[in-house]
Amino acid sequence: MSLHNIAEIAAIALFGVGLTLLMMSRNLVKKVIAFDMTDSAVFLFLAAKGYISGRRAPIIENGVQSMEAYINPIPAGLVLTGIVVSVACSAVMLSLCLRLYRRYHTLDLDEITALARKEED
Image (cartoon, rainbow, N blue to C red; front, side, top):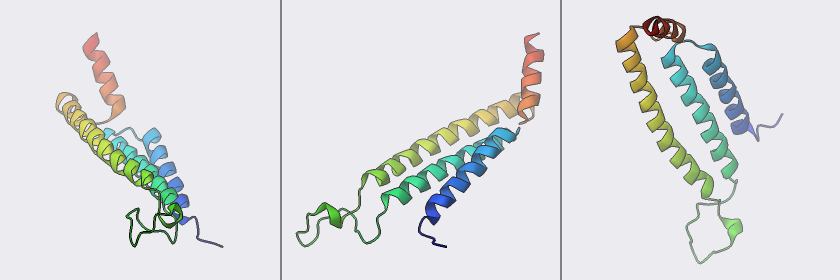
C-alpha cells in the first residue's frame, strides 16, 4: 500500500466529515465549525495538488529559470486568499450566532425557526 496520496485522502475524509456535520447538526456553532472543516479540507487539497516533490519555491537561484525546477505558486496564493475569506466568513457567522442567541436564548436551528414563526403571528 502506497501512501503517495495521503494528503488527498485526508482532505476527502475531512471534507466528508465536515459536510456530514454541516447537514446533520442543528446547533449553529457546530455548523460554523463544520463549515470551517470543509474549508480546511479544500485548502489541504489545493496545497497537496500544488506541491511537487523535488521542486523548490519559485525564487530564481543560481540563474536557473527552467519551469521544471520550481513549484507552481498559484495554488499557494489561492489557499492564502481562501484562508482570509474563510476567517472573515466565520467571524460574520459567529457574530450572527451571537445575535440569534441574544434574541432567542438558544442556538438550536429548529427552536429558532419555531420562535421566529411565533413572532410573526
